Image 1 (tube, rainbow, N blue to C red):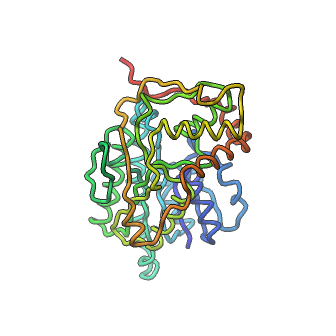
Image 2 (cartoon, rainbow, N blue to C red):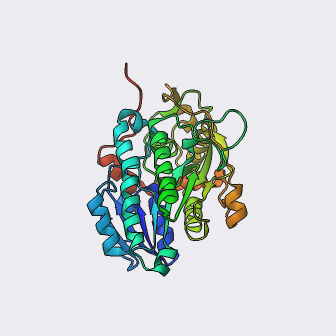
Image 3 (cartoon, helix red, strand yellow):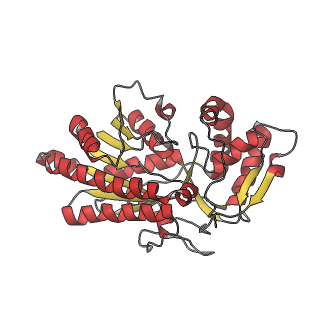
Length: 349
């Protein structure tokens, strides 16, 4: 199968690219190479005859249509998005442009291409939109998101992803485009840009800096290793029922402060410092609109397609710390380009 993957130089997208090439698929990686994208993430497959790269903005209609014409994919996996909540508070219109307009542009290009396919190729074609559990808003102390949970986004980022989800369903129902959607839990693992919680903790600890924790750290997230996620996404692309949504979770719900302390314990073993890393934890002002709790019920995906996460959270976090310790050149390059995990997203009066 030849798969057009948008955002394939990003964190989750690159994991999907690496897995797809390893599984024998041909991959076309379409990426605008904005600040968090990094072609080093796919360096291991860049010389494969099954891999091609297109430096294209997903909101550029002519360029996107050209990619379809040149490569003639069998399927699309749409992961290209702006994804950081704090940045969405700083500049929400960038998120609307990429996540909403970009998705609409990609859908129209895919629809035009799909309508021109011969019968057999048209029957095989799939458009897989990859989204987030944040579109559902926040949970209380109990319960879990499922495929029927009403949408209730609370941030510019989650609202932009909700808008994209609705567009994909509309193109499926109105135009018959063969679509499938997934909404995932919080991802973690190697190659994650150091603006999210886990790489921020690890890198600031390795640099001897304070470790910021928003609010009281009691926010709850379901954590999913990126490699488990990549496996699930490729499975849904190939075997998921058209028009359906599948939630992908790690079955690893934990408070943020507990995740931070687990990371600190691993850092104490893998990169000991003159004081315990947990002593550098500093509670800081919470993010505006910070959802309290997410949890995912992934039973539909497990039941219908036989998928289940394979990485226990403790082991996955320890392996992630080890990766960052052993791959300093990767993250030092990001530091050298000027990103130092500065705080973003505080609403100014």
